Length: 352
Ligand code: SAH
Image 1 (spheres, protein in one colour):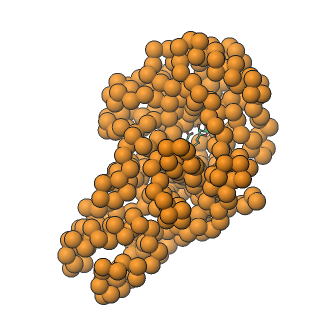
Image 2 (cartoon, rainbow, N blue to C red):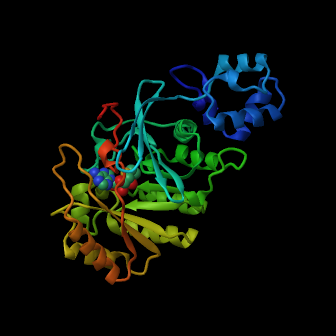
Image 3 (cartoon, rainbow, N blue to C red):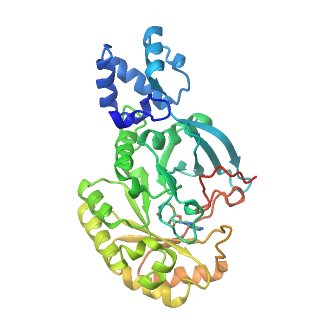
């Protein structure tokens, strides 16, 4: 449990604990086991003060507040899109760092896009999150707290999670797996694995590891190019794990889990959006249980990249479909509040 003790406050972030660990902790401080279940429920409610735990005695509340925190996040600012109601939250961690989460409303309910790290080390050329490099991993408690905090803010249940915010989830693998297990807990937030999507730029060894866990989450792979030369130019990770190794790992994942993989392909005008690129992509994915999500590149200052016309994007989509690969164009959400893919940052810079 030592790594759950916050280095800034020297206190345990209770949201870092699984229900079982919370039980062990509560017993270790001389309390009855069932108290842990009550406390766990309060944590999932997103309470911000120990005194909100109305079914817990004052003495236990005091003891807890002495050694523990209820979480590390506060809402610093929120932006609401005038276009589609998407909300971007700038959240402050208690070490002064910032992360961002984005809430989207779909006909099937709310979906939240959450961050896994402060900053990102992957260096993708089109993405704002990686500009200042990686500052640190988020703990599992800080990951789950994004959901809890936003859910409390809107007063409604969030039913889907996409891990596509700031950071590379597989570069923080253990905490991400811990988070998934914790958010699944039916006596807590109870979000099933099939309602969780984790997106990776392609850390191949972790794809194998996840496959062996046989989870039922949706795996999304940021592919963005179908040949090594083009991919390495925009995604440095490709120099370590080339496309062949990545696709092998994806096939293994599908075999092990039976789950369909989503391939994300950000369309950048003049870089990867030619007809030949579409044909090469279809050829690469032929016979795989998969879906392609096309994302017109969102503007990020200093990258010089832009998306092609709506017609050119539709043309790209129709070519891959002609070759039998299902593909959709991702609906852009919250672009007026810099909440779209690749526009999230962790420097706390505010864009009104
Ligand atoms: N690190 C993870 C998850 C974060 S990014 C990953 O790489 O998958 C979520 C998705 O948005 C990824 O597919 C990413 O490549 C894409 N993306 C990043 N910058 C973008 C931009 N400027 N426009 C469109 N999509 C972008």
